[in-house]
Image (spheres, rainbow, N blue to C red):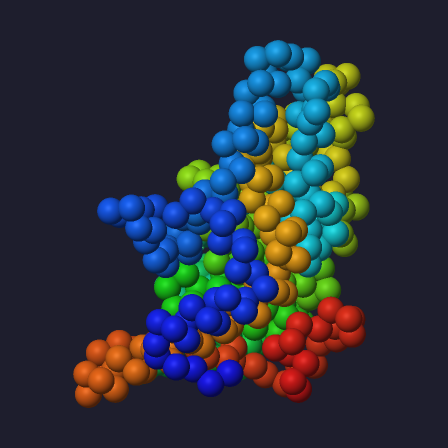
Length: 383
Ligand SMILES: *Cc1c(COP(=O)(O)O)cnc(C)c1O
């Protein structure tokens, strides 16, 4: 597409956009009766207009059914999460058994590291990106200390080269290979919150596994934003918040992913609670924890019905959009247009007033990993 820096061009492109109608699904904050141009969806997504309806539905269920709401009504709370799992799965490229909505993001990061960070002997280190979101840094530092290590010894941060803002994939892979048998866990963001760099997740996963490590991702800025194939990429675990790119409201519910290959591993530690207990037997209230099979086995506390109702409202809009691929196409176009405009402004000002540090293309390495043919995302299939 040939871009033009004019309102008429932007409006006519909008009109031809097949996803155009979805704008009306959301409330925009207003000033003097005019909606803001909202560029903060990376921090808090907009409110779906249906959100209130979905909360009201649960308030009415609670009002009319009280405790019976767990098993009765139009959405028995006992099984409410199952409807969400079906819609979360295509967003991250997983089976519905591999995902579950629960808690909030940093809490889930801790719970998953309890299971998947298993330092032993020489293999006790965590490798991560330098400049990760602070909550992840604090979580990882405290996990390392919890196991009796000094973060200075146990955390390896991969940094950009001098004068660069983002990481080179080759540098990440080299660092993983270099520390090989010292690494217990490779824990990266999917997309870095600050630079917008989308890491080469399949290559990092493969390198981590070759080093004998477990590989996990924090997908706060990736889930709902870019196409993911967590199952086929063989990622061990992941978690994300849903209030950024997935519009589930402030403090919204988090999602977790656990790869199917871990379902039968009884050696995994967990911080258990009754809601992770085998669903069919949960209310027998017996002694001795038996986990539900799948990501649901990591649940700790009972279903957070209101936050889930909000996430459900939003997930239905994703379904309407055809999930991620159409959104990604649009996002690439919008980003390309914005960067064109920024370059125009720089040109008019005669200086580089604004610098774009987000990589235009994900840095790639020749992919030696295998993906199922029908799941190869567009950005890899060029090779
Ligand atoms: C937004 C964000 C968080 C926030 O964590 P909460 O537990 O939801 O407050 C954590 N990690 C990353 C990478 C984020 O982008």
